[in-house]
Each structure stands twice: as C-alpha cells, then as structure tokens.
Image (cartoon, rainbow, N blue to C red; front, side, top):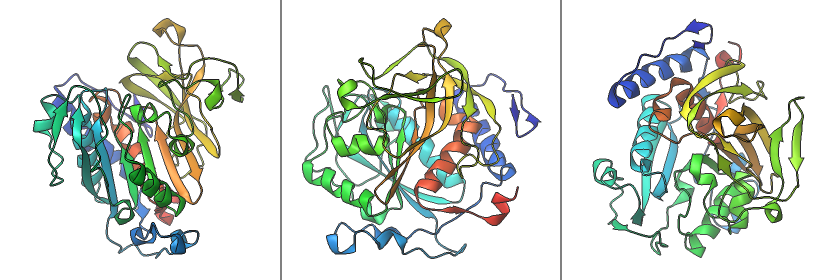
Length: 350
C-alpha cells in the first residue's frame, strides 16, 4: 500500500511485532502528514456546575508549551473479548506520540475480556470482579471534568451507567468536553437518548426507524438520510477494505491520502440514529461479496453536541487494527481534535 506517496509492504508478523511496526509506521506517518497539534484546551473548564456551562469551553490558552492533552479511556464491558488489550494499545500509541497523557477507568464488574483483564490491568486503584452477565456498576463515577477527552471502549450489551454518572457526562459534553466512540461503543446504551445524540448513529440493541435515519453515501456520491424501516446495525465477514475520504479539508483528515487499504476488520453497515450535526469524514464500500449490504457506509465521523466535540470511528474489531499505522494516525488526529487541540500552522501548510 502507499502512505503519503511512500510504498509500504506489510509483511506477516506476530502480534507483538505487528504492534511495534504499527507504532513505528504510525508515528512516522504522523510526522509526514504534519500531524502536530497545539493544546488549546483547558480541562478544568468542563465543570459540571450550571454556573460555568455555556462559555466555559472557550477558556483556551494558545500555547505550544502546554502540558499533554489529558485522555481518559473508560471500559470494562464489551462483547469483543480483546477490549483490555485494545485499551492498552490505544493508551500506548497515544502516549508514544508525545501529545497525550492517558488514564484508564474500568467498571467494577467486568464482562468478557477473560485472561486479558489480568494481563492488561487498568491501574485505576479500583477493585474489579469478572461477571458472566454485564451489570451496572453503582460505583462507576469517573471525574470527567479532569480530562480534555473521554474515549469509550465499551460495547454491545454493556450495562447502563448509573443515572448520576450519565448526567455528569452529559454536562461535561454540553460544557465543551471531548468524546471518542471506538467500534462497538456505538452498540452500547441504546436507551440513553443523549448518548445516541453524541455518537450520531449506532447499531444493535433494538435500534430501528424510531431512532433516526440510516446514513450512507450512494454510488453517485450523495449523502443519504434514509428513514426506511429496518434494524440498525450489521456487518459482513471480516476482510480488508478501502477507506475513502469524504471531507479531506477537515483537520482530522488533512494530509491523508484520498483512499487507503484498511486492515482486516468488521465493516459496520445500516447504522442509524439521531444524526444531528453529524459530518461523515470517510466511508467504505460494503461489498455484497463479503456478505455486505452494497452501500458506502460511514467509518469516520464527527458530531457537534452542544459545545462538545465527538469523533466516531466504527473501526477496531481486532488487535491487528490497533497496530495499523493508518488507524493509529487517524485515531490520534481524532482524539486530538475531540480534545479541542488545533493543528499548528506547520501542520496545516504541509
């Protein structure tokens, strides 16, 4: 494949070697695309008090000397058993970029994950207990306002958060916080209206026409908002596929190729939801020969939720994806953008 005009041959390797190679290529690509971001955020501005709401997010300091962006990854319940490792991989490559400091906050009751939970602990000073069915953790109460951006690695059938925690997260986002939805995080919490407004579109969990339109591109390059009846969510076989940029001018996408081949992954189709203030950054064709639906499905999106910013990627089924250099590059861009960082002039002019 080609990355920014450079031909790269991917050689079959073990998981650890692939991850190291992905690190190296991803970080190289970050520099080639000029992916330098200036921390203009002020994490203390995301107060949950009403008196500091609407204008708090504007209190930004434009200084390249600011501390790294503060990231919180929340996880603990996901139908994809690799979630403890994918959390560790995201934390590792974000911190390796030198732009972020990353904490992990995990539910007390963990579902799936198996032995990987022990191999990749959260180190959040909380007790954890593996359960056979996901259930709500009444102690789950991250301090969202301490962070510039929250990354969700929850998934299908994750138990609802406590009501107070849901309200706290909504306030954080309404006040200008950042959120990143990764892969199956758009399967989670189908009954939580504000969450569905944040992610824009999602799948499974009983989502259907009552939740909003299907969003996809047709073969003529037109963005469709389709209110036809039907379930939300599906995917064909795991396979490699091409990602096509739709909004190359967006800061997350600047400097990237118009298309690239993505690693073997699930390509979600028929996602639907409120889709308010949603921008599709990139799509992939869901080919029927892979048991797909035959449409150009969104894989990278942003959503403006009140004063908050959301980056939504449907990619990320297996560990190979988290070692993919293009995934690392785009994901790092998305996290920085959601955190409120701005691309430097040097980055913009490359």
